[in-house]
Length: 133
Image 1: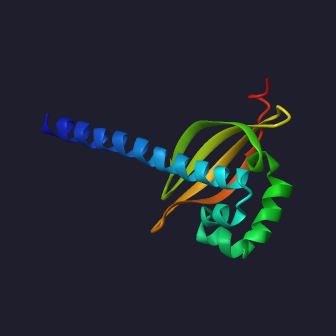
Image 2: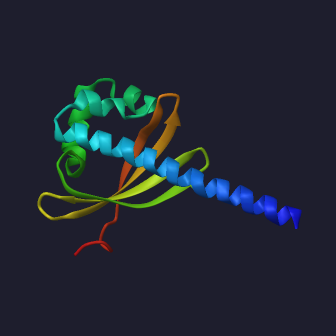
């Protein structure tokens, strides 16, 4: 009986941790999207993980990658959060973005917790055909 109670308490602790992480992860993604909307690529670059920052080197290089490769995040019409998955020490947050032309895109944000908070460690465009209207 004691094992069941301890297990239930542990499970409840985990259940409350994920929503807190989910809110923080969404806040990080939202903050980067807000920076993109304002054309503040310096601020948007700050939400990238240290690895992504090293890869692109400057906010200007990051801007080129985003505007050319991910225009749906630069100017989204609608953003909806889908499932969040824990994968070891990282999380994968799926986001459905509708661009200004009405096209639906599903992206997977790879999230990494750092000393400075959650950072975006990569974004992959997924097949969105099942979400198309």
